[in-house]
Length: 156
Image (cartoon, rainbow, N blue to C red; front, side, top):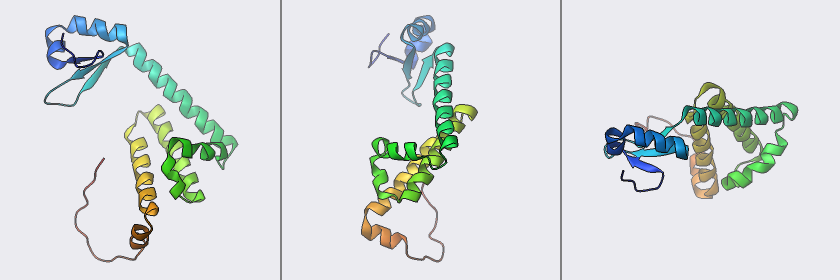
């Protein structure tokens, strides 16, 4: 089997020798399957994936419990700059809103298997911080607008 990394195999390897690739995935926990014409994917054992899901669920429930017992989310808000240094450009109310929105998105990922929301929440708040970090752009962004500016291109 050819592989660029110790934990990667090609799609051709998987097609030619699925048993060896499956055994490797079981031994390593997971292997990345690279594909020239499509996105890569991971092959993993069901028990490992279920363990990851339980871990995310536990972390999510812990964060929700913290917020339940401290509606201001003070402990989480204090920790946010260590995880997201750019939050220094947000107001205290914005930081709290981001924290609560992120915990809700983590809960959705854990309980509903909706992962994309987490990345949307982070990207949205990072974009807000980016605008606020540049005083000239922030002043421009706060000016009233009118009319149609055309289609919007979304980048992930």
